[in-house]
Image (cartoon, rainbow, N blue to C red; front, side):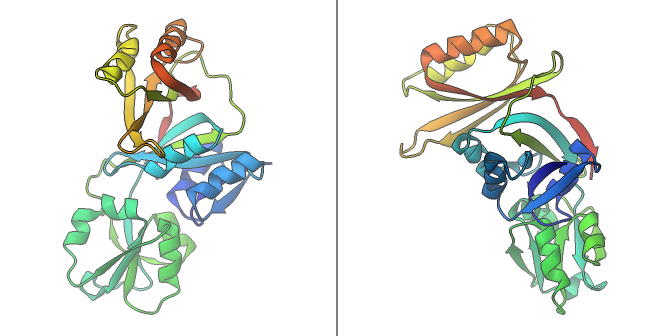
Length: 277
């Protein structure tokens, strides 16, 4: 039986992503308090795979995941996109005007910022997880609420006070599937993720990106992160269409290695499907 680690409590969106990707049969889910613990479980063999969010269409990148991809030697072996619907949950059907506090993960709070600005005299409290916030609310008798999934409402016996409170209806989170072992990427509909470190000289980023443009390779995501111990210097993460089986991708990466301090291949994997939460 495969063990799948994810960040959060039962009812978390990462749990839903795990079930959508692997299916409910022949797997055991391993809830984890932090993203680091997910990576650690996979790295030590306690879990076979990990499922972690990397970016949200409304609130942007999950920077901690980017940093952990570099800190560990794990491979990205898959991805999926989950359409996120947020719900305001309470122990009772409180009126919104009665709610004293709202708990949720910072990403969910950001995705529901327009709704939250309309609340009067309500304290917004960041928590480690959306389902964890629902679990906290289930244990309190006060008029408080959590922003979480409908699954979390069912698991912790909470009532839906308000539905679909995210800023936009089209709200998607992209999740990565990580493993200690790489997999053979499919021939078609493939994506490759890399991280590279450039010499800090004028035009260095332009030259780095040109190795892909010259070969008509589509870049689907570019992200920069601060370089540890190097003030105001950055590492660059890139997702590109194509696999390590594509000659033009291999040539581009070889070219990039010639003009970079280092290039690390984080994984080559099939482009993810979209699911609804």
